Length: 465
Image (cartoon, rainbow, N blue to C red; front, top):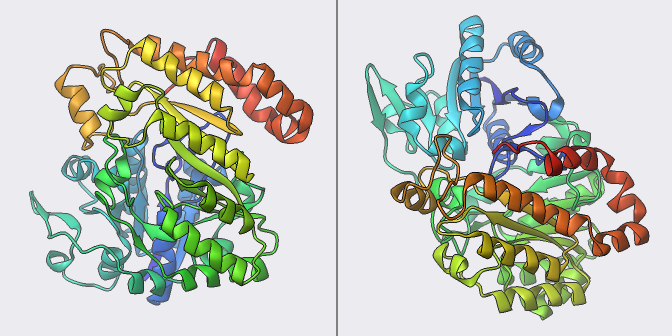
């Protein structure tokens, strides 16, 4: 088959490839990682594949439509977003009408309420819940729809939900060709950037799911690879990909490992092999704030540059309520150890958790200021349907008409004001001024675009979730 993997056009610089979708103030763009692995697998199965990431490429609706019509696919694999779902489905329908091709909806956002998503279209009748490489491959191979696990499809006027598929094993994950090779053929690396990584960089996965997997608010652990699951590629397979990137893609300056959580055991095993093979390529990863100092020293020796860490809140009661599983004291010690080991930390905090108050939120701001991470993000929480977080918020009547956090003791307007205050506290401060003086290009000149966006967002513009 001729297959197009599509992240449809929507808002300029919109990003639906992360664990939440938004237009980033920092102009961050992650690679379409899940579509990438699907594409690499489909090529391995003998199909001809084209990946279109319209928002990253700066393509509008008409440009994208012309490109697809000229390529004339047999199948479109449609990766939808939370904000953009109606747009995505309508756009795909317009293509199907002109090209006369088939279409299947995929991705974590489509897993939130598959029946509701399918009901928005009279033309598209297929959706895959969970990992979608093999189900899409079976659709492309002409397998009977009723026997494809993870597939949800409309048969006449009824929606049929097929049995759940087992998660991909190490052998199956190793079988998929390197996503870095696929991306290098399909995309322009210059479209993708994030403040924490050297430019240009590339994203890869070494495993699926989160070993901890209990945070009540996380979309992926409640919709894509669920619960305390972490199925990994073999370390040898990952090392071979690093060797490939270092040799064949020498312009790539760093690798972001997009695993939900790079566990301490995994980090040690991986770092040992990076050192053993004398690989110099810098890399970063997501991690929980409970790694030991010894492990972080080893990671630094293995060229780890940055750790993305979800601290979430500075209030112990909130951490307990969202099942974060880490204490404030452990977070502080981790932050200190990371700096001592020479690792940068990108810290994620958020506001709008169940039962949160302005006083709780101010503790979060002060914890972030005290830690003084290399970079810091303050997210206004997005209650994704299907998560325990959403269920609790809805049960208590703490969501406004737009589905955003809005509580009597901490209104939506107050949440937004605290988020603005947090950015001002961290980035209009002596700490940040020192960073700008010591590293002017990295912290100021390279971020002119982000700064120009941040000023209206912090002082007069209303944030959109």
